Length: 424
Image 1 (cartoon, rainbow, N blue to C red):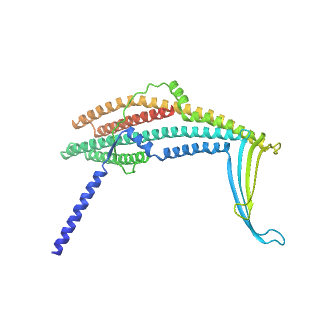
Image 2 (spheres, rainbow, N blue to C red; image 1 turned 180 degrees about the horizontal axis):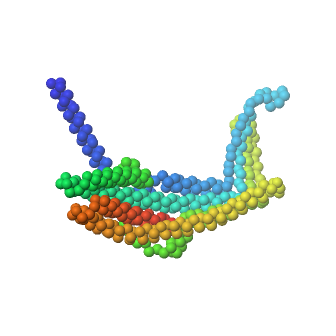
Image 3 (cartoon, one colour; image 1 turned 60 degrees about the vertical axis):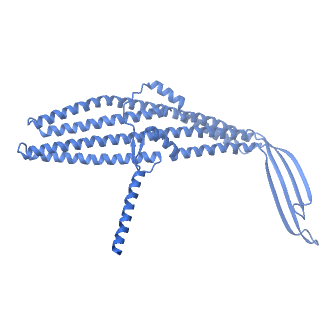
């Protein structure tokens, strides 16, 4: 009875485990993803955009910090002492406390310059968010197309394995009836083994590409997605002149360069404020005595002007540094503009080059398919060689590989072009 009960318990546990595995498999079912779905997930989950938004928030708080320089500040001070106040006097406790107000009325333009720099920094941070979004979109698009390319290559290599497997069967059948030599069987087996190796590599490349895409969109790396889209050719009619003009008008980096120049000009004003007077208003109220806060009350108000007439060249050095920063910002703006134009031209020309390859490789695939059929027909009829069939199969595999690569290069470079002109 005990043994029967134990078996019954084990059966229940195994059944529960099977049900759990089945439910887990259902929960882990692959999800369908379009390119737009992937981009939306990346913009939501990618750490780069989260960091850019954090930087933007910090820059906005920097404006508040700079504006605080235009407002008064109040400080409190309190202290006490116990001891003799003089010869022959008794020990006692004495308290001192005060409230102080300080308000900078004029800083020679320093405060205003710092506020303007903070505002410009916030604007630049906002543009950085836009730039980060564009880069994430490009990374996601490239990752998505990489999975599509890898998937196509798995299909290409699987077709090759299937064709060579079928060919080997026919070769073996002909050898069995004594029509062909053993060398044809051996060569066919070698080519099939090589094709199987290439298929394994293609499957591994697909797994790596899928993990890379998952990393970009913020999904678990082992998630198996089903991609809805395909690698297709969609013509882009943009001219290179229009592309460059769009880039100059829309790229966040170019707008950030202008902001950097404006910020450097404000930096000169801040540095030059050291040559101007500083005017502030102050007020103090103090208490002292044996009881806290003190019985004796005093107050004072004053307006003070401070003008540093000679600082051993410190202000002049700061101004020179600020002007050097401006020159650097101007040169960086030129460099950025040139880099943007180069990026546009590289992406455009690479896209056009891939576009030409799509047409030629597509024709090559059709011819390679026909050539393989002819080689197979001649060989199976006894008027061709096994080498002709294998060469034709290798040529077809290469043609399909080239066509897939051309489609991938075209779509990726088109995405790079859209990012380069600020429209992705």
